[in-house]
Every structure is written in structure tokens, then in C-alpha cells.
Length: 346
Length: 257
Image (tube, rainbow over all chains, first blue to last red; front, side):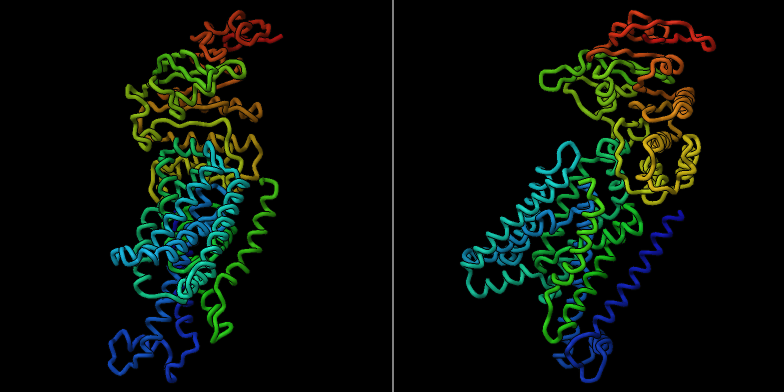
């Protein structure tokens, strides 16, 4: 009971913090609303004020608000996918980017962009639109299966194998994507560069709706699994004795994480380290109690990515810093910190 | 309670278990003993449905154990494993609370907290409840898991079954006796326990039935008096021994050498 109210307390604080950052972020930017604050313009837009100029409306709703929501959705999913992978592999170093899921997704997305151009006219519109997304999902799913099969046997994960398989997948992805860049046309090239660097600049409301749907489906299945993740720390057999259907749980995690990582990569490219940073900080506060860190990582991931994105678009305004630079700057030292802590275990 | 007929379990061409029969009544304390590599842990794994051996069926409460719903089954039986994880970055009370996971969804109820606290008292780990599990000694970790497994079977269900694989490892004398006392009390409430033990004298003192194993087969089965004869033991362990009567309990007492 006591612990439960503690969880709600931290969830509330995180939610309030997220709202404050979102509000601040809405007001930060180069565009000048003719002396008005961004909130006033947003309020006018919501009320449907006919005096609102088109460009004001465009900036506040289609650019800033869409981007803020996208940062919230993607940050949340990247962070929860990291936490879930760490539960599955029982290791704090398992994240989508380190074990190669992101590279797998990027690779198949790149193939879809470059080769898909040739088939475009033969495919129905709905398929065209989602081709990149579905390819990214398949890419992350296949990488996930590969890493899991190679590094895990009898319910035990070999961490070195896990990370090295990730390195191998990343290397393969890098070389093929490089080749695709070499043979691609100008327009595709711009798309590919965007994918490799990672950015939230291409946010639209359509993308946000798709991301939102994926997020809701994923969270309905994953977020109540805190207890099951905890029990997995005992080992798979003992988790089974506690009434957890381990095989089904593992399948669910693999599919849902691949779906989340794939969707995030399809819409925002590779934004690294979010799934490493957030669970690491939460573990410092709450140990590895997944009943806490799973729901909290959903909110804290949003906070992290939204803050990073707001910095990345304001620090060198009117230009923009690739967001991956900021997350890597935070993630790198944390990666090293975890390595040092686990020096003996590796 | 549990019945298994002619269990065979092979790894490649090596017979780990070869035609083992087990049958356990309500309220019985069965100790499985035998030399290293006799198949004690494998037998326990098969009975607890951790490994499936093909056609043979283990009947748990007259229903094949593989047909039980996993969650429902977890309220009827629990298992204490020999190799417990060393890396569980949680507090002791969180680990014990895992035993109550079958009973609540997101929030532990009053009974769950009660069961957790009672079992921590019984196994003498209550004073460690806020310590981090990873900082405990081997014996303390064993007691935490014993506490967790006991908490799992605190319920209204009549006749529950506990599997314990070498629960006395790393425990000091006092806690060895305490652990066996807890298990004995548990079986006296019409529950059953199957325990792999190494100490034959403790087995003789606490168990109702003994299953002596050698190279994957049952070499003797019955009450301690029936099983613990000098021939049976010397044959199974390939080591000389003498049997005399325990001066207080009148159980057989085994002196090796």
C-alpha cells in the first residue's frame, strides 16, 4: 500500500514536470508571433478565432505542438523499449540501439526507401504510405530474433554475445546503408541522411496519430507486466513456478519492443541512448523494481527527449543541432558507468 | 497428492532417470537422498513440471500436471531451487513479496503483507527486510528464498505441495534445524513436501518417507527405518557405515566410516 502510493506520487511529479517542459517548449523558438505569446496563439487556434493568421496557426499547431507531442511519444516508447529489453535480457546494457534493433530497422527502412521507389506505382496507396514503417518493424524484429537466439540459451543471456551481435548487426547495417546512399538519387539521399542522424523535425499530426495508436497498444500489454519482469530476475523456471507464463511473456516482449522500435525509427530515424539513460537513472532511485521503473520510464523518457529536442532546436537557433548528438553525449558516460559497475560480471 | 509412474529422462544416450516411480500422500514429508549425480534434482524437476519427458505423465491431484493452468498451479505448489540467482537488485522484502505475485494484480493486499511478514519472521530474515538482496551472504539468501516459497503457499487451499532442492545449503546448524522445522510444520497441516537432502541423519529425523536413489534408479523406498540399513546405504554411496539408534528420537542414526 505504502509503496503503491509512492509510485503514484512519483508518477504525478513526472507528469507535472512533463507538462511544464511542454509548455515552456511551446514558447521557445525563432518565429515571432507579432508580440503575442505562443499560448495565446494556441488558445486562439483552439477557440477557432478567425483573426488568426495562417502562418501563426501553422507554426504553433503544425510545427511546434506536433513536434512536442512527437518528442513525448517517441521518448516514451524508446525508454520503455529499453526497460523491457533489460527485463528480458536481465541486463542493464540491453537497449534497442546497442543490440542492433535500431540498425536493423534503419537498414530495412533504407532498403524500402531506395528500392521501394521502383515499385511505387504498382503498390496501393495505403501500402506505399506504410512501407517504410513496416520494413522498419520487420528489420527490428529480425535483429531481435537474431540477437536473442545467438546470445541466450537455457534462459541465460551471455552479455558479451548480446553486445557483440549488436555490433555485428550495426556493422552490416552501416555498410549496406552506405552502399544504398552511394546508389540513391538526390531526393532519397535526403531521406536517408535524416534516418541516420535522427530528428523530430518531420513531425506531423498523422505520424503522431500512428505513434499514439502503437503506444497505446504496446502499453496496454507491457505496462502491467512489472511483477512478471521482477519474477524473471529469479530465473525463468522460478518465474514459471510463480504462475507466470514465461514463453508467452518473452514472445510478447519481443514483438511489442520490435514494433515500438520499428515505429520510432520509421518516424524519427535513429535517436540513440534514450533506452539506456532513463532506466539507468530510475534504477539509481528505485533499484530494479520493474513495478516502479516500467511505468516511470514511460514518463521520464518523454521528459528526457522533449528537453533534449527543445535544446537541440534552440541552442544554435535558427539552425538545429541533430538530437542524437545530445542524447549520445548523455548516454556515452552512462554506458561507461554501467560497464565499470559490471566489470566483474562481464 | 502427486503420482508418477516409470519416469525416464535421457540426455543424449545417458539415462539420468530410469523407470522411477513416485507416489506421495497428503501430509507426507518425502526426502530424496542419494550420492552426487544420482538424479535427485532431475527427478524433482520432472515432478515440478520444469522439464517434460515425453509420454510419461505426472499426476498432480489426479490431473496431469501439464494440463494445469500455470497461474492456478502456482497456488497449489511452489519450488525452492538449488541454484538461486545471485543478482537480484531489489530489497529483501521485495524478493519475499514475489511469493505473493499469484495473489494480487498491482497492489498487495493485507493478507499478502501479512504472509510476507510472518514468513520473514519464521525464517529469521525480518531484520534484513530493507537490506539489498545482493549484499546478503549465501545462507541469508537461501533463507530469503525459503521465506518467499513459504509465503507463496500461505492460502486457503487444502493440501499444497512444496518442492525443495537442497534447502540446507550454506545454512548454519541452527538454521538447518529451523528450516526443517518449518517444513515439518507445513506438512503437519496436511500439506506435502518433497525435499532433496544430503544429510541422512536430518532426513531420518524429519522425513516420513525416504527415497534413496542411485544412478537414476530408486534403490530403496520406505520409512527411515526401512531404508536406512547399513547394506542400503553402503551400497548406494559405496562407503562403509554403521547404523545405531538415536538416543532421543529412536530414529536410525548413521555413522560413516
